Image (cartoon, rainbow, N blue to C red; front, side):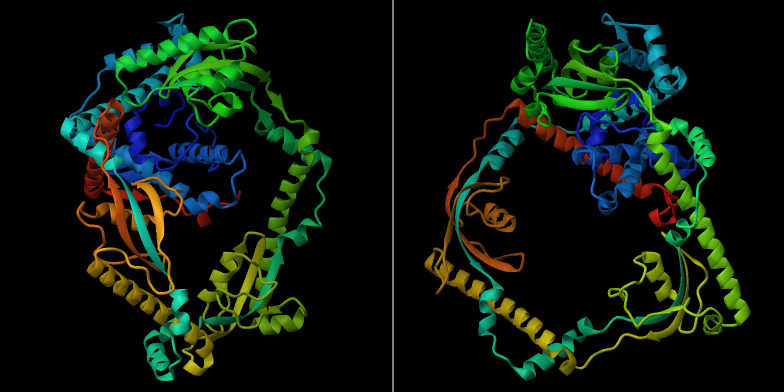
Length: 631
């Protein structure tokens, strides 16, 4: 379940394990970009994951990404990250976790559900649970007590499963101390970098060696298959120019879709966060609340500057420097307790401490932007454009279908072209990677072209901006060129490869000489770079080598100064010497213990989920992006 209000009740551990998408912590997106289908997107051991759940989760992920990019995410970025696949993976793992708990006999009675609801501040008035407020808040968010409590019970079962799995992890004082010392260790390096480019001048031309090398590597020079097309193109834009939309049609469409032009009430707020780590002990929670109450008293003082207090005290790194400014947001965009508090305030009100899964918040409401409905004049042009696209698509298909029928009656595309001069377009032979200018830049067009056999006519191909009919006039199979035809390129590639071999040999020789002298030697014409003290995981230090070198150096035994072999990083070879090594402080604090415990719990839960997944019967029915209707 991904219902808005129950996010407060979801366990943080499963979020850590299965949520791959990084989002700004305070925001939770709502709405859908995928149409809200009721059909399932996957089945896990016979239990369906509804399309509606996927739509909500996908929209949340997109909203989170958009917030990170200031509301304007780069085109195609979500597809590049594979957000759809990540969201589906998260939902499948959540279902596996629920089923695993049920199989283990873990049950949650009604009493914990009632207790959790009573503890949620969103349902409280003057610090006590209010049945009327409970019903009102659920009603405002289009939920019933039955559906909310059913979902909350499912989440509590999941939390119980995680707690029981986590109870098997034990972090001893000795383990925590050793980890602290290990993580705080530092070392200083001296290193020599050997780049292949520096050795290319030492590679002498050798036709015999080049020929032998080319024989082993000739497949990389094989040409791509090519196709020569004859095709008919029916551009949607051509039909759009001919379409006129009457004002009555625009008005009717506006009234039909008027609800979609409604912009809900938005509120502008600031907050000061006193952050609490997951599973923090009660004494830390109490201390944080005490701090929040002290700052609240300052914020409510006459002429207090809330933004200045946020810059001084807030632990929300994402907006601390902006005075805790969260900008405008609609109901349902924040975690439930925070959301409920904001939408119960008036401009100028300061509320808190409000507890959420992130800690205690002090909130100031700056401004209310009332609900509005965009006027007909504001959206008239976009409605007209949308209707033109719809009608033009239909006209384009009608033209394509008529032409296709005419081709069939004529007996061939060539005979059709004699009847309809100028309509059939012809290309030069082209490959998948290199297209002639003017060819539709649509993957479906290219895919259809290379799926044809020589002399074959396609069906009507639907494109993003119209339709096409293709005929494979000629197909050219891949060719294996002779060395003479690609000699310049082959020679350059061979030289780079030989230079890399020389660099690797030079690195091995330098390391051997250094080990013999028991210290790093300076190669002829080369230089030795010396770093400052490096940490295991830090980055950006002056003169620091690539991470592969740093990692290799920290793996050396304390008595060793030189590595067993040169380190290759990004096709460059490094030979290094450890000049200085400092042991890390082994004092263990509560933060370290909590980090180790959380890591161990994550590892154990991840392993258990993997085991459940290996035994599960999972069927995925989520359609690919290409199969979806165009928005």
